[in-house]
Length: 572
Image 1 (cartoon, rainbow, N blue to C red):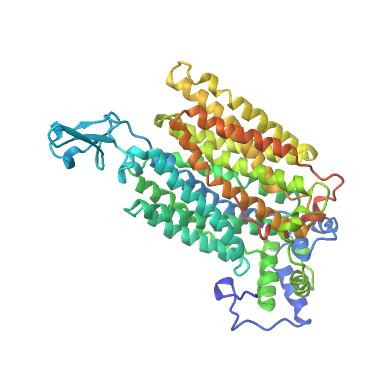
Image 2: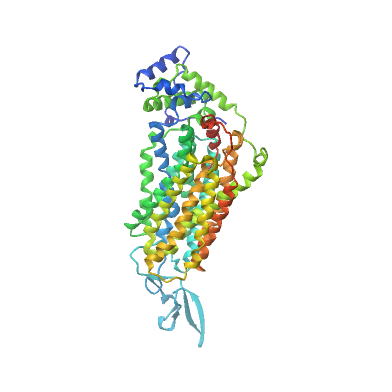
C-alpha cells in the first residue's frame, strides 16, 4: 500500500510542481552548490566513501551537524518515557500507620466501641449483644504534606498490590505500543508516528493526572505508555536511517542514556510538588518543548522512497538531502543527477524481497537455534531486572528516594558507556565481557542475604543496599544496550527485522511480571532483590553464549542492511 503526503510534509500532492526534466536537474543541483560553501577536503572524503553506499549515504555522510541535531531531538523522547515509567517511586510513597494515617471509624457507629488493628486496616465492630465482626476500613484520615496517589484513592492497606497493578498497565502499554507502532509504520511515515505519539502523550498524560477514578488512572497510564513507545520506536527508525558506520552503533548504544538522564531529573520535579497531580503536570511539560522542535525533526528518507508516492517522495527527499548537505558542509558531494539517482534508489527499495518469516529464523547457520534461544532469554531477563531493580528503590526508605533514584540513573549511564567501550575496543569478545560482568554483579548482589540482619545506622544501611542494587543495575544496562544494538549482527538482512521484533516483543511479554515480583518485598527485601539478581546471572550466562561473527566485512558495507533491519523493530 502506497502512503500519500499532506501539506504538512512540505508539499501538496494536488498542487505539486512537475517532475524535473533531465535539462532542469543540473540547474537544481548547481543552485544547491551555489547556495552553500564547500568544505575543505570534501573531495578527499568523498573518494573514501564506500562504493556500496547509496546516494543518501554518499551525500549525508556517516554523521554530521544535521544528524547530531536530529538525534538530540529524538533522544529527548526518552526523558518523558522514563518519567512516566518511574513516577510511582515518588507519587505512591508508603505511609506510616498511627502517624500519618488513621482509620475513620465514623461509618461503623460509636468509635468508643470499635477496636482498630495496628495497621489501621481492620476494625472490630460490635455485632449484637456480645458478638463482634471484623470489617475492613474504607476511609482514612491523613496527615502528610504530600498528597500521594495512595492517599487520593485510599490504597494504604493494599499499597504494594495496587502499585504493582498500576505499573502492570504501564508495562502492558509499552508492549502494545511497540507492536502497534511497528505495524503503523507500514502506512504512516516514522515522523508522523512520532508526532502522533507526542500529541497523544500530551493528552493522555494530562488526563492521567486529572481523573478521580483509579481504573481510569490505570487506563490512561496504559495509553501514555503506548504513546511513549510510538515516539521511541519511530525515533529509532529515523536516526538509524540517517546515521551510518560506527556512529550509528554509538547512537544506538547511547540511546538509553537519555532515559537515565530523565531518571535523574525526576527527583527535582517531585521535590517541589505538593501532590501527585502536580508531578504529572511537571512531567507533561517537556513534551511541549519537544513539540516546538518538531519542525527540525526529519523523516526517514528511505522509508519515504520505499512507501510514499514516488514523485512526491523523491522531491521531498531531495529537499531533505540538500538541506542536510548544506548544514553538514557536504555540498560538493551532491551529484548533478541527484533526482535521477533518488528515483533509482526508490525503485530498488520497492523491489526488495519481503522479510523472512519467523520459522525461518531458526534455520540458516549452525548456531541459529542457540542464537534465537540465548538472545530471547537474555533480553527478557535483562528487561525484567532493569525495571524491577528500579521499582525496588521504594523498598530502601522514603527518606532516601531522591539520592537513590539519582544513583540508579548514574549506574545506568555507567553501564551504557561500558557497552560503548566494549563494542569499540573489544568487539570480538564483547558478549563474553558483558555476560561475565552480569554474572559477577549478580553474584555480589546475592550477598545481601548476609547483611540484612546487620545492625548499623540508617544512612550506612541505605548505602549498603544501594551498592547491592546499583552494581547489578549497571551490568544490566550494559548487557541490554549491547543486545539492542548488536544482537542481529550475524544475520542476513532479510532476517534482522523479524529477529529484532521477535526478541523485543518476547521480552516485553515477560516484562509484565516485573511489577509483581517487587511485591515479594512484603516477605523480605532480600528475597525480592535476589530474584532479580538470579535473573541477571541467567541473562549473563545467555549473553556469554552469543558470538561476534569472525572475518566480517567492514561496518560500512553492512550499514544499508542494518538500516533496513531496524525499520520494523520496536524499541525498549
